Image (cartoon, rainbow, N blue to C red; front, top):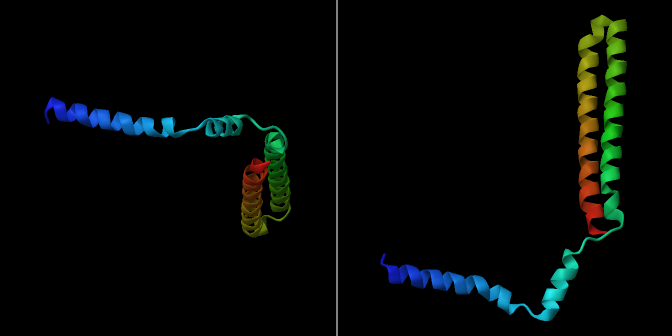
Length: 111
């Protein structure tokens, strides 16, 4: 390509890139500025909710594991069944935790 075609292409891209900026009115600029301001309220509680959710899941899985290990120590012949039940229960606890984190993230995001 020659220099004239490259310059024309660059000019066209520059003009197209500037079109949305020049199309904004003062009302649009005010709306965008208001939307970009941080909102305080329930969304501040997301961090606390996430922390409590993860803490609860960790405590629950810890108790589950402790009880399963104690049961396996008392009855070693049933260790396989107890371990399987423990893994399934831990997976269910993690699933509930995951959904709780999604709810905290999306539902409280709107407030």
